[in-house]
Amino acid sequence: MRALLLAAAALTPGALAAQDHSGHGGHAGHAQHAPAAEAPEVHHCAMGHLSPEKCPPKGEDKAAPSMDHSTHGAHGQDAAAPPRMDHSGMDHSAHGAGADKSAPDAAPESAVPARAFEGPRHAADAVWGAEAMEPSRRQLAKENGGMRTGMVLVERLEARIDAGDGEDGYLWDAQAWYGGDVNRLVLKTEGEGEFGGAVEDAEIQALYSRAIGPFFDLQAGIRLDPIDGTRGYAVVGVQGLAPYMFHVDGALFLSDQGDLTARVEAEYDQKITQQLILQPRIEIEASAQDIPARGIGAGFTKIEPGLRLRYEFVPEFAPYIGVEYEAKLGETADIARLAGEDPDGFKLLIGLRAWF
Image (tube, rainbow, N blue to C red; front, side, top):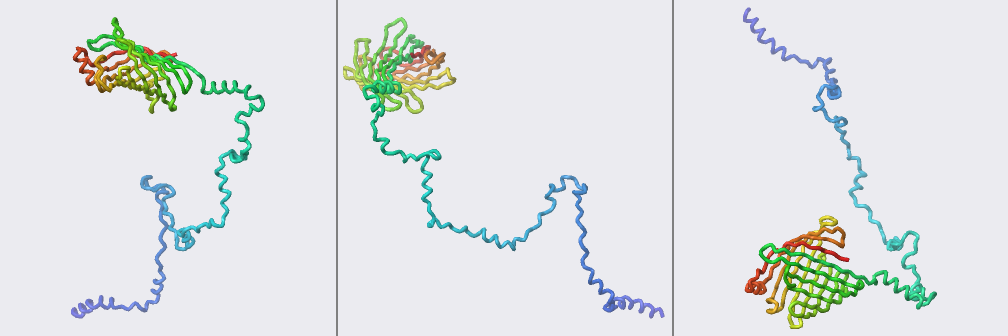
């Protein structure tokens, strides 16, 4: 009996598993159990359940719905090149009006009648007579560039204090001119000496100056050196304003003894204020041959670079202080050494620049 009960218990699960559920027609309704609709997303940010750091900016919390561009067939036209315009059939002749730069509604420049240029050069002569109008024309030309004026400029009038053991001295450098814008008479003079001693060097130049450009004059004339026997020179040179506002004065001197020398001066006015002006200046001299009587050797003979700081109380009156290095060069320096002189040295300057 016990064996029968154990056999029946062992066979029961297999029987249950072998049950046929095909006849459970009522379960066919389970096929209609479509997936349950998704529950609406709970917006925790809007409900204030999350901190602001974890929420996207307002207006960006929802992704923009994707757009289906497949139906935008019209966009295909954007990729295509625009149709070319055919200018061959168009009339562009009216475009030429842009060349006329006259004011609106004004007659173009080409509208001036030719007879406007056929009259006399001075139309007033036809009314008043050429003799009566001539003085007026001269006065008009004089007041518009033809006026004769003059000027005296004392460029340097200074005491020169030797920074070494040399002698203290003085120097002058001045010029004056009279004439018009193109033709002028120019006088120049410069020289130097020692305090308590005789004048060491002096010269006077009388030059005819003619403008050869907007900023430069060509000058020619004579020079006289009255010290140690008067010597005469023929002079030709240029003076003017070089690019970058450098004042330049250069000249060649041919003496009555046949000696050829040259001198170039350049200076620049650097304004620190409207009245305080720093002026670097350099002067270089050269000789084509030895001139034993003047202690000059061939080549570059002297160089004088310096700085002057002047204060213009008014433009016509400006005292200054400065420093200058003066050096004899080459064979000229050797001649100075043989004579027991110091060929170079610094000078402290106190001077005055004035014009009227």
